[in-house]
Amino acid sequence: MRLTARSEYGLLALIDLACRYGGGPVSARGVAERQKIPPKFLEQLFVSMRQAGLVTAVRGARGGFELSRDPMAITVLDVVEALEGPLQPTQCGGGGGCERSPVCAAGTVWTRATEALRDVFATTSLGTLAGSQTAIDSGERGPHRTA
Image 1 (cartoon, rainbow, N blue to C red):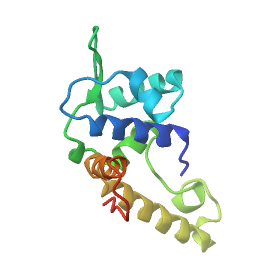
Image 2 (image 1 turned 60 degrees about the horizontal axis):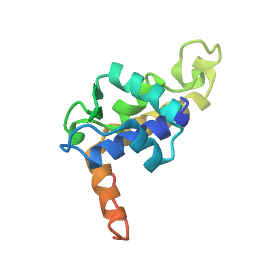
Image 3 (image 1 turned 30 degrees about the vertical axis):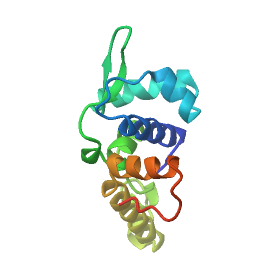
């Protein structure tokens, strides 16, 4: 399991779109500026997220990107897997390719860690994160639940 800048930036970009959901397309340049994401990198992320069905692209002068469905119906897991591929345990915990797997206690901890991460990602929606971000941006402080 490996999470990279693709996941971090992709999630930030989609939270940005979720905060603006229902208001029409949002320019990639605007997202890049607000989230401090290199524009060329963001373009690559939007290609992957469009192919995964998370966003739609609208052409024209008022074009840009928008979420393809309600932010409450898109999970962090959807975003991560669109950008990184399936979330799986390391080779050690996957049982597949590791010759020590049947006799190694470390595999169980990797499997449990992956399952816990998968659960958090699968139960956290963009809508929830957008609500938290809106509260943060409006000056509210304090703990924000992401589930």
